[in-house]
Image 1 (cartoon, rainbow, N blue to C red):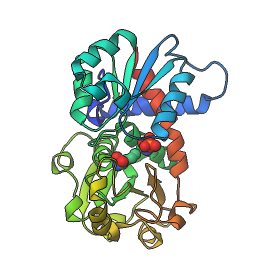
Image 2: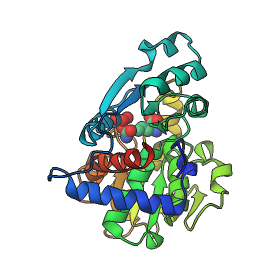
Image 3: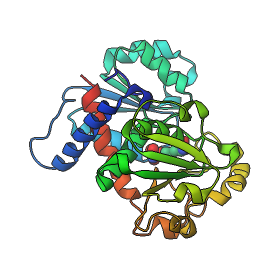
Length: 302
Ligand code: CP
Ligand code: NVA
């Protein structure tokens, strides 16, 4: 496995199986005695330049459960917020910490930290990628479906979001067949769609019906990602036909399951009746962040 997890491109198909096996075993053992504590005596920095509920809590709880100590930092309150360089920050933090988890805007900042620090850097969301979430999502599908090579996932809405990017990579690596339905304005990144990196696939259509046809899972993300608030009105208007509502749900398989990275904007990208329906597995998915991130940290932090 690579030193860092900056995007799913740091992983191969075998790494993903290793992460999933450990996630399942940590999930099963949680709360029982004699759990592994690979972070005993270690501190992990968790830096946020954007809001968070799930990532903030699941990383802190996960680090504690692995025996470590989490140093949670608001990026704006560190000297990075006043212009201290990324390389200088990396050289300082590696003297104290065993790993850095960071949520920020620019992917290049996360890459810069990783290039300059000897310790692992884990991307907890940038404008471009959210690998911990995408791995969790595929793990959740694996729990429900078993054989990922038979899984068909429809992703509807903003095809150019950090989630769409990461899910395309994770699907390709894990064997999932992903079809994105989005308007032309928010079409998926062609460079990622064209990558040949594993047994799965990612394709794009503007037709909801086409993407939903035979779907075992349907996934959506917010229409206005963090940092894109200025584009709100335009995004809501253009993405409106791609809402995950009961009519959309009926286009999938009879037992289609609903995924959403959360937070959900109920009434926008997803309706209340879908969020609250028996098809929705979004809270199992949210719980799995904890187990999957514990597995990732156990494997990366030596
Ligand atoms: N899904 C996710 O990353 O949630 P938060 O923004 O609450 O961390
Ligand atoms: N695309 C969303 C994901 C939130 C977890 C955002 O970046 O805001």
